[in-house]
Length: 403
Image 1 (cartoon, rainbow, N blue to C red):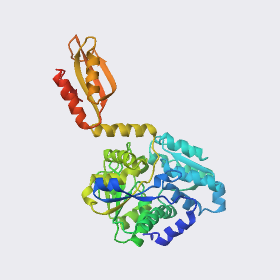
Image 2: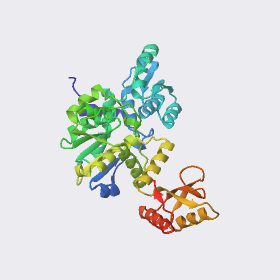
Image 3: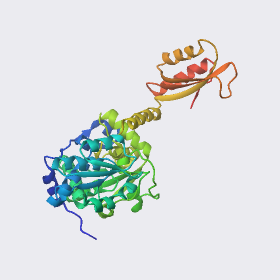
Image 4: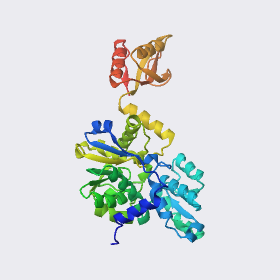
């Protein structure tokens, strides 16, 4: 087994990238601490210029290129954040960059990568299929492949996140780190094991892509090709090199639901007023899912990315309202006569219900010929308001039902 990098490698990476990458804030969250029962500290890597930690490892790797390699150019495959890191710093260093991205990549990430001057090639439906295009491009163009995680120089660069966290708060009890390919947790684990040996290191994956957890027996189900809210960690097979680090340095890996990640995104936006993508909210999802594991402990979480499609964000926030009982749908049958719908709308409004949409159907379903079935989507200030609306409509003899 090859030896792992050391703290010295991570410190050298920190010195190399200093001034080119932001030293992001690591701040205590009083509200999330109260909500979880743990002492929550947040590392705001979503405030990097490319809105992700990925530029650390990408830059460290490219700074080690020879002049000949720089002239020929670099190649990367990524769902977005590594792509932006490579593209941005390649442009700063005057290195031509070609990026292969899955066709499922959010438009915001592909467009931002192009804006940095890189050539973007869309290939394959996911990371694994996109990666299949790499060997031919390396052979044809003579490019240097900048791996998103399975590279010691990249791992050392990502480890600088851990250096900064432990410098700001050396008494952390737990570090909770999202895992896709495993580069971030590998680098952080190297730094943490040297600087704070007692700290517990916990990896987090989505149940849609639990490749690393499955590999080490922490989850019985293998990764399946599909769609995840956390596309930044939607990696089917974990890295070969990063398995060495995770197997030797990481304590355990937790697997969280897609819904819990959505909840984490919404809470970070509502409470911290910060935008995290799915991978960036995975750590909070783990703490919220198993609070007994973290209660009373100092927990470091990394908001590792903030690139999220606007339409996806809108859907997440709507779904969160529905889960909280503040967005409801109900149906009822009304007499098909003038003023009946207006009367119901007035009753809903009087009880603080804000009607988003109304569907009024006379032709389909099993209603009587002189009746209409009406469906409402309603926002309410708190879940109890929905019950008051249902009760009032029942008093009027309308037999309302939520659906």
